Each structure stands twice: as C-alpha cells, then as structure tokens.
Length: 494
Length: 100
Picture 1 (cartoon, chains in turn cyan, brown):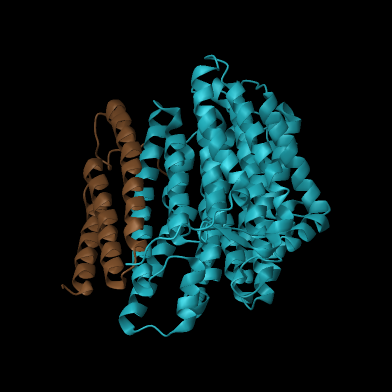
Picture 2 (cartoon, rainbow over the protein chains, first blue to last red):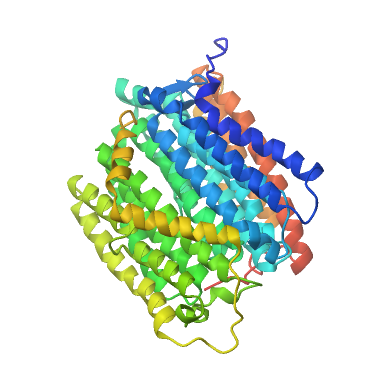
C-alpha cells in the first residue's frame, strides 16, 4: 500500500462554507449561554448576519473561481458554478430564517437551536455544490438530511410533525443505503471516487464485463438515491406527507434547498464523472423528467390542502430543473438554464410559503384551500402577493417563473430534446389550472364566516415583499441576471 | 487468498436482505437495523475492493460511512422515542395520520 500524502489545503477557497459551519457551532453555544429564553429571535438575526457575512466572503473569490480551483486533494472545488449556487443557497437560508422568526413563537415551538440547524443545512448544501468527490457528496447529502430530519420533527410533540420526521427519516436512510452501496460499486469498477478520476479512468481504458456491470449498477443506485432526495417520480411518495407535517418554513426550505442541492450534485456527477455513459442515462433521466413534470402537476390538481398542493407543485418544478440538468450534459446552456430556473423558482416558492406562514396563526387553519376564499377582501396586499407567486409558478409573463421556463424549454429544444420541452409545456399548462383556481378563489369568492383576521409579522412581511419584488424584477428585466449566470459558467465542468 | 468476487457477492446478499427488511418489516426499530445492514454491506464491498486494488481510499471511506451511520441512528432513535411516547407504538403502518 502506498503511503498517504497530505494534500495541499487552500482554506480560502472554502471561506463561505467554513464561515457557515463555524458560525453554526458558535451560535449553538451562544444560544444556550447568552440568549435568554423567550428572546430566541436574536439567535435568528445572528444566523442571518452569519449568512450575509458568508455571502460577502464569497465575493473576493469571484475572480479566482474562473479557473475552477480544487483543494483538499481534489475533494472540493471552487468554480463559478459552485459560487453562484452558494449565493442562491445562502439567500434561501436567510429567507427561510426570516419567515420562521415569528412563526416559531406563534406556534409555541420556539427553540434557539432551530437557527444553527438551518445554518448546518445551508453549509451542507454548499458542500454539495463544491463537492468533487463522491464521498464528499455523500457526506453533504447526509449532513443535509440529518439536519432536515430534526427540523421536520421540530414541532414536537405535534403528532403530524413527528410522523413526518419518521417517514422522512426511514426513506432518507433507505436512500442513503443505496447511495453508499452505489459508490462502493463505482469504486470497485474504477478504483477511485473522485469525479474527474472516474471520467479519466473511463476515458483511458475500456472496462471488462464485470467492471462494466459494477459501474452501471453503481451509477443506477446513486441515481435512485438522488432521485429520492430530489423527489423525482417514482420516488416522490413521501413529499406531500413530509411537507404537510413539517413546520411551514422548513417545508419551504426543503422544497427549494434540498432539491437544488441534490440536483446540483447530480449535475456534477453526470457531467464530470459519467459523460461516457451518457447514451445510457440520458433516455432514462429524460423519462424520469417527463414523468416528474406530468405527475407532479396532475397530483396537485386533486389536492384540497395548500401545503400538499405546493408539495406536488414542487415535484413538477423538480422535473423542470432536471430538464436543465439533462441538457447540461451536452451544452453549457443547460447549466445556465438550471441555475436561472433554480433562482427564479427559489424566490417564488419561498414567497408562496411565506404567505402560508403569514396566514397560519395557530395550527392548521391556513392549509385548507377554502380558507383562501375572499382573501382579496380581507387582506388585499397579501392576496396580490400570493397571486404574483401563483402566476410565477404557473409561468405567466411577466414573472420570473415565465422567464425560467422559457430558458429551460428553449435549452431543451436546442439540446435536441424537443419532445421533452413539449411535455414540459403541456405540464405547465395543466398546472395553470390549480394555480389560477387559487387566484379565482381569493378574488372572486366571499369570505367564509368567522375567519379571524391575521397580523403579518415583520419578518414574514419583509420576506414576502423581497420575493414579490425579485419575482417581478427577474420577470421584467431578466437580462442582467442572465448575463450574470452566463458569466458564472465560464469554467463550470461542462 | 479468497477472490474478491466472493466478498462482493456476500455484500450483495447482505444488501438485498437489508432492502427486503426495510420493505417487509413493520417495526421501525427493525427497519433501522435493516438500514444498518445495507450500510455495512457497502462497507464490506468497499474494504474488499480496497484490498483488491491495494489502495487505502476504500478503507478510509468506511470510517466516514460508520460515522454517518452512527449519527443517523442517534437521530433515528430520538424520533422513534418521540413517536412512541405520543402514539404508543413503533409500527410504521400505524403512523398514518398524514395521507391523501
């Protein structure tokens, strides 16, 4: 056996992630010893400050990241793809914390450790964006999942929350088993777990039959495991239950963060490690994307509960994101489309969940579709904001969602996947039905009797208006955002 | 020396037993144990491949997997205890308030 060389370590490339993890660990202690009970919002504000600092720490890396630098012996890498994702994830984390500030208090589940846990999850997402080795990707997924299991069950002792945590945990652990066994088989076939190493090995020599089988089986298992995390059809069953049971800000965070991070890792695996297997996985993933888009939209139509409806809607949006990931294997345009769609979907979906949080005073009142009747009278501003988010999710111009869909579908079209783009258009047409149904219910129907008026707390208010402004801004003037993302792709792996 | 393929076949058998255990058994505790079996099957395969290729990478990864498995069990048992306290059962079929 060869001796182990200590690889060169360049910590500055990991500054945002290190700040997040370090701050999360410090904040756990600060929360216990320095922040009085009943004033835990302070921990939340400190967490937001930490994320802002981490975001700023990423700025000086912009120039260096053009080349795609790796550190820790090629375990982690920093390129503009990773950096752009880092900023998107930090934004998702900050907006989620912002909407949980008042929510936790109102629900009587205010515990300070909520905010450090969100920080850990955000750090794990950044780890997934930067991971260039299957073992790092495994650790990122597990760290993200473990924190999310706890956050899902955070409304303990509410039975639905415990139950959601249990379901998520059993399926998540099951998927983790698939992932580890998959990477074990890939290691057996190629003798390495570094993404670039796998591609180099596959490029250098043709595998013998046994190794070829191991590689295919291993890649398949990894794909299934990531499919569970992203909730691709047919691995999506847990999503509605888990979103319904978990605290609403956590559901918002999961619907955007987990999906984005797992797909970001999938994109890296496909483009950097397995481009030579593309003829095999491309039709497979294209079928999954088609099923995910269609069944997500169809599933949402039948739902009477807002949280479940948004869960199914997030499934179909994962399908659109997957479309970008698939195209990314042949053209950088796909990666651009993926990042742009993730940005616009993140802002819109967090906004929609923030409206849910604003209406949810005690318990489950705001979850039924009927409780939205007449919202346009009772809370005109909130209803208008919700309408903007619904238009954006449905892909109606001039919103971010429309630009995102346009980008993804045109990328798929130019990538030679016209039929998939067509299915995407059909699916979003079908999804317009339930998004617009909510809007008509808010504005065309009378309020039911005895609905308590709600006060929108400051954090959620800020959240909603940031999301509305960003949704409209990206929809009306998409050019700067597209340029930014195009520039971010100079050195990404594809 | 025993050929690597035997170890791999054994690990595949263990992995399949783990998968079947998760799918068939209804007690959450047994489900967690089956997941552990899946992870340890992967560990066995990793060590066998590392031995075959004479690299340490595979062996190092096993430590990471063991650590993750321990963390998962810690969270898993906490959730299990919470569920047991409020429902008085650890049967995954009876945990079904959420559906639709």
